Length: 302
Image (cartoon, rainbow, N blue to C red; front, side, top):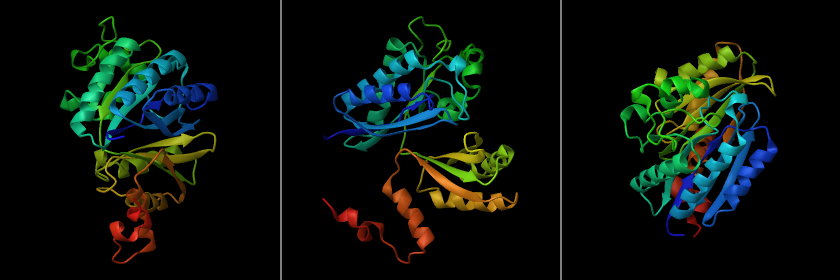
């Protein structure tokens, strides 16, 4: 395969195994696409899929998954800790091999148009595919979530980039809206705390995330994992070289001590570049004069 694109759709379903496995079945059915990983979280009520494929396959699978999600996921009855605005909440495309960011932007726009036409879900383009600077940030688009989206979309400035076939600026009645975009690799990374007080997690998240003065390339919220009765700082690390994982962990540890709690563990959702993990290993092992390219065995394998 000379051209490879990664696609990481997030679905607002983390509890019904039959729906999650149905999504996996759709993902596996499209030629030219490989389903690398998928995981679901009941507390978040969300699942994350990681797919690789050629441009034709990755476009086809994204549209097929959106149609299936619209049929099977009803946000009027959906509850979960993770913010959401759509049955398929976000679909990013990431250039991996033989493609440019501009190629992924074009694919995002083609897929967005096809989802609106074939699944009836309005589409906002975000990150590098955004048509307006105010829509680059996913959190800005998602603000108000599914329940507030109809009121938001009534404002002229929030007309979607692609409306449903009716042409109306309104969410799909049960599937909401979806953000489709192009971006560099992102790491979904969570830190669990030894407390059930979600206010502590929220306070720490505010310190850590870049939008409130924390780590530049970190987005974070505090949530409660009800099935485990623990609070969590849930993060998206949008540039793992600019803000490495260990830096977020160490800052959270320091802030947690203010409340008399500690970090009990961390979670990696989906896949991550090897270097992101090795950078943290280098930090915690205190390796001197470490050379990633030369001293990692796998880098020498053809």
